[in-house]
Image (cartoon, rainbow, N blue to C red; front, top):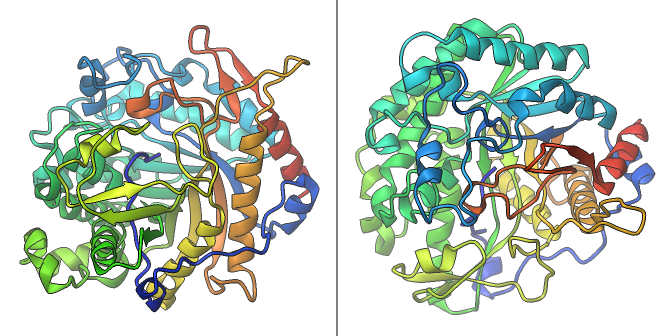
Length: 495
């Protein structure tokens, strides 16, 4: 899952007037039975996690450190000083966690394949113990009739890769890793996601220094965009060459961004955000080229000036599906930022000519993100309008929210805010793609709740809880929340 700085913009006459695209008619319902009946047949309703956030067991077997292991061990990097060492201890609790999925009634599970657990040091053959761990997970999933969605790269890059995604060679290493995975697991995985949220890796990891590897290069981070996308393309080629039976796609995070005012300056900075967050990651994959930029912004995008045509052919191979993560809209204003914010974004952006402004009209999550499900419809509309016929079937590969867990008088974790968040967003997505909806034409095939269990939330450590299952991070004990019971009812009410 990606967090913190999500940038995007809709480029329509809408913004010339400073208006925002809002959908005031209620599209969402938290009535479990009604929502369950609205889910189409064969639609996948699942949960999602990532290896670095839940597995722990970082010193078990031949597993070697990832960039996140190193980053989390550096003083001051993680807000509560925690590390990847234990997290939710999923490594030792696979049967229990799969039982939770099965009892939930979900029919799909999105997880990531820990790179350094499977390929210690990022080179050579797959490690037998690492393979055995994921075989156990897949055995449990298949026995429970839960479709496995495997993400190849969910940010846990081997620390041995000098300069990380700044180095073009890292793209080749991802392709090599994918080839090994396809050969070993190709008959056991239903869907493959090459990379999760390359935008968050570039922006938070290399531009702003908020995530591993902690580089604060601002626009000099843009080479990591191309190298990640090239790695995606090489991974697609490797999986197809291995003859995997599952479908193949990529996951990008999309956020609609609106200018803070009618001013040309705010509009220009919102345009910049659209390019650096949404379009440089989606356009090459779906359209086969990087987006054209206004002349006044061109000097910032020299990294894309001389991209070989062969690279773009590799990046833009047809996909079986497109994964879309949505969490919130973004409001952009011209002028330097600075100051404090719950996620550290404002301080990190202090040297940029733009800033993010709050949506005071909306309630917020534990991270301070605006809760605005109507903008989910905006996102789907933008994607449909931009990519149209070249857009393959779509999965919402992440949607969810962090809130403080509240125990009621009966001793239950009554996370009503999370029920409202998930219910309203799922209902909004279904309505948007339905006949007559604002994104009619998108072939939406599934929705994954982030997250199955409370996890180690990257730079926020254990301070943000996204799970529908509570985790006691001292004992590892799992306790289903009210949102779990509610989603269980949704699944039971399906057609």
